[in-house]
Image (cartoon, rainbow, N blue to C red; front, side, top):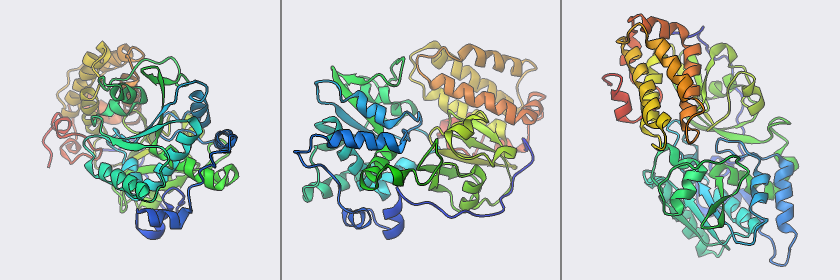
Length: 440
């Protein structure tokens, strides 16, 4: 199945290595390897009252934005919890509910001490007296890595702020920061309505700062090397590097570190594309599809926005021409429908209806009104959810209708391709996979 002319790579680009430097240089994740690569943690003297202001200013000057998906300016989030009289709680978000992303697992297994360095620094800057590292309850390997690293640090007296690992439920929506705070407060892990991301989250009137694991790793590097160093790579509007999970028909799938502004095509060239592809998923399951004719687009927020896409969760997934974009969308939609918080009609009813339409289209069993009905349902759901989860799926489905337009037209005429019976390219749960057909 081909949505556009297939793309085949032609050259390679050398990799960047900052966040993952210790792992790349030593192949080890222990404290000694970390310190040998990065040196000691630059914590302030207790008498240095201006240190926190300097760190926040350095983060602002560096132009660091959150690497968890929303891209909110990190310095503004730090500042928002420094103005109250209560000591905040710092929550490290390493939930990684996005199935196509592996970067939190790479961070916690390869460079956990860089993440914990960033957490120590931010905790000191905002006056936090506790750090919780949130790892999903279905990620035992990551939790072991965190606890091992915490024990190493405690053994040499490196930790000033008490830190512990917590295990929230491993679901897609739990990684949303307000859902994470709701769970830490003892409630269900449901996203809460917020008019602005700049509004501080609270738990029993106590401010809570949620920062992604990758964001904190960058804070640790900025504290050591300064904002000018950080901005020496990337673009003026999107400085620094970021972690990207690449998947598809690749020689080296997995997590890579790239400079912002690297063309999407160059990222895949580095990973070693093995077969022509028909489209690329950008940003994750709340993201969009990118046509092959646009793969020279720089991987950076501004550039991706011009083609209707976004960095999102740092995901790039290539779909080979042999696979079926309609079937891939049906599987993802079935998964997303089952991962909602169940707080509103669009989530409870709308997403399941959209998924069912896509399943029938993928199988070639849809009636003549299926495409019209699907578009009406997308219009009905959009903007009406209690959180952003329904809108994320709507955005992805709309994008697929454009990029895979020819394929959808064939399936709507009850002329499905053989691609729907192939092994899924995009990872989903077994229940979502079997919603479409039999898998090998």
